[in-house]
Image (cartoon, rainbow, N blue to C red; front, side):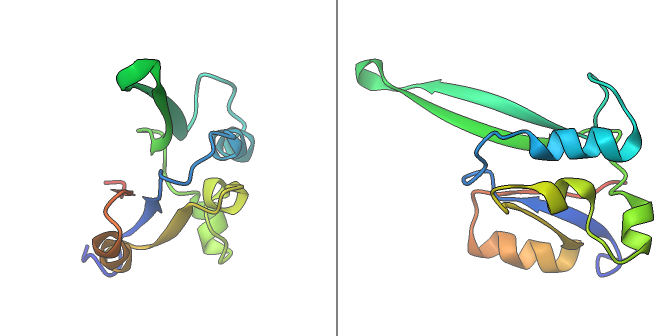
Length: 113
């Protein structure tokens, strides 16, 4: 399988608001109940000087993620991408997503096996 045919997700976690819409959409799409999910939003708290903290939300696909093949067959994006309220998730060929990653490094590029 070449990179041009291999699809994946590009997640710009700098703009993720932690709404968990991607996680909920995934569970609904596949009929799963928590804790099963194809994507999990991780909350990361970083302690900063002077008693301040920086909060990040990082959506990460799990081993259950198969990129919603039924949706893709219909020409739709995976449920997590469609329902991302911050529009910080993108679906497409890994080769194209990799080019976008080069332009802005604070992202995660993920592709299933």
